[in-house]
Length: 137
Image (cartoon, rainbow, N blue to C red; front, side, top):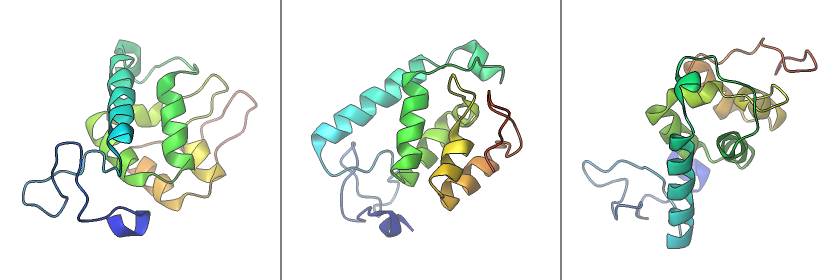
């Protein structure tokens, strides 16, 4: 499955482990150290911005670095990273940008079936409406 998304099973993650080593967890499998640093900083920033309103599921609709990161992961088909992020912070699947759109809208927009399935596993609705009254479907 990982190879389908361009992830090598011999490359190393940010901890220097290969995904095929026993006990290795593919955190953010990347190809360059600079990219690893960037993703780590983005993830840390996203984690810091997840406040109590996000954890209760009543987060405000706003454009944040976190919503931008989710958009990029889905639009660039970076499903391993999306999956790993949502495993540690499942509430991020329900975030919405200022226009009321969120990960499910972007998954349908980019016809990313894997993202749709992942988001559905986290309970993201396909019938909620954005500011224009449109659902993701």
